[in-house]
Image 1: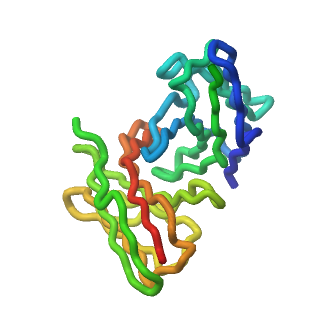
Image 2: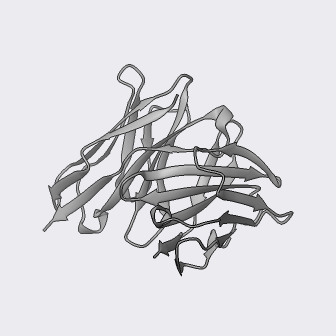
Amino acid sequence: AQSVTQLGSHVSVSEGALVLLRCNYSSSVPPYLFWYVQYPNQGLQLLLKYTSAATLVKGINGFEAEFKKSETSFHLTKPSAHMSDAAEYFCAVSEGNQGGKLIFGQGTELSVKP
Amino acid sequence: KAGVTQTPRYLIKTRGQQVTLSCSPISGHRSVSWYQQTPGQGLQFLFEYFSETQRNKGNFPGRFSGRQFSNSRSEMNVSTLELGDSALYLCASSYLHRNYNEQFFGPGTRLTVL
């Protein structure tokens, strides 16, 4: 069965510092992986996705993630945090034959200190 | 294109009542998925509809049901509401790539059960 584990329910960084949000997955077949961001009182916005093409994926707002099969990881990074990055981030996995079913991690709340 | 719309945005109901939530997908998207988001359980998949047929189902009791119309709009119904049904209900419509779905989320319906 698929599962996603996000290490750290809360991450706090200073403005301008590196952002690293961790995600490990479990899947019996090659997975499709996604990172979403959620701002307060809003739905989820897709940041980036891994679909078995390049292992280093670039997304919106300067975020990127690297798929590492050997480590079953898909960590999200951003070189320099901005105050507007403060939000909750979700990692999700889908197996191709599961159609529109995503399995989400528990989420990581990112705080950015001035 | 207009995004995914959900109505109503907020609902307050009492235990034992039933509720219907509505989701209008992005034009051209034929798949609609529903998720429940709570602080304790996180984001959990409820079900997916594709071309008016339920294609996937999560682990929720039968009180949770849905349907999809010929124009791809979807409704979700919860009968005999319980306090634990208080949650943000998110709808997502999917763009179908060859091997995976890319999901776009609506703003959600916040349901409070008193």
